[in-house]
Image (cartoon, rainbow, N blue to C red; front, side, top):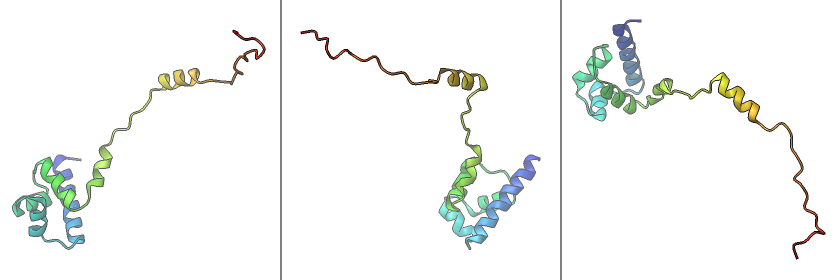
Length: 104
């Protein structure tokens, strides 16, 4: 997918959620702290800054889309095998102290 196609998809997403919340471009841009023309550019798929996009998503309560960028730490198969090998396989009784022996 081209950069222009992705920007256009983001613009459609923003416009859809703005209209769903019954907000005008003027109201949303004011709440996001950007100009109406910048919001219009975003909705048309033009180039805007990442900070602008984040401000608009925050006002629209759509920051959950950022969850797609979360990187989950993964353990390598070798490290997993080593950890599995180091796990205890059985329990041992602790050596019992002879109650009749005393240091006294």
